[in-house]
Image (cartoon, rainbow, N blue to C red; front, top):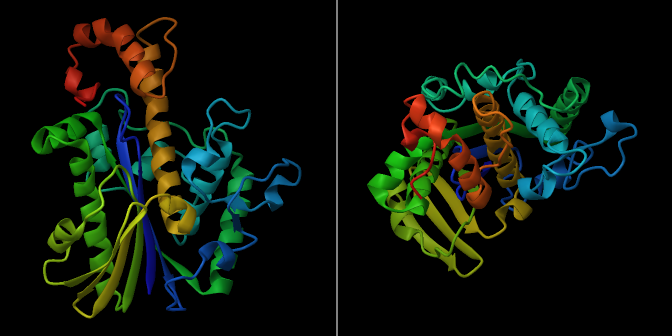
Length: 332
């Protein structure tokens, strides 16, 4: 069977991309309730090691990105970055640790790197990686995770990200008049991809945990559009969880939308982390570009109050450079 997770980062900000990611693993054991943290114990953990001593021997932390990353802490992005680069590399046989942001974006959705290049602050996405993590630590973690997966009978089946840059975001929201609806359209694409992959590889079961955002409780109709030939059964629709089973073409797909899904599913936590890391890399490039045009400009994470401050300070330069505001600032 395949176990997978989907999560996003950046739905709320006014600047920078929305990133939605998925992560999937193939299990020899067809138990839907298997705990991948336990399967890969020793290579991964739910928490960051408190000690920096013997750092190379520490398991990488896989958890909700908000719990791992605090830009004001001394370690900053290091724990998140080490884990994301290690898991990304471990899930790609024969590949080395990414050295530039372009290496990550080039493996994202079709034409992602080309779309990024239309924004002057991304250009060729030459941001050097890692930002703060030590290459040796990432390399050790890659080997550790690969060994743990082999021992546990766990195979990587795809780690995928879909960055939605501001111009695209504004077009999607303009077409749907709702940012949550626009975001779910991307989630639906990732679910459809997982379904196609599971059928192509002959899996009997697919288990997906999507981190649930907002107050939506019912997903029957949009799931029926994702799996139009499937027979759908509602398992649960509650304040905390909406769960469904869809039988389609010999595949039994168990899909749930869980509040706090990153705490229940390692693939969902990994998707959360990849989304957050890619967004932070993009914000690094955005901040660097505009700092080169506005002296003394303080960097931003892009969230509402500070994002508005940042945009106010660059607005004159945006106009002077002839840059479309809709590629910089979100409509909602």
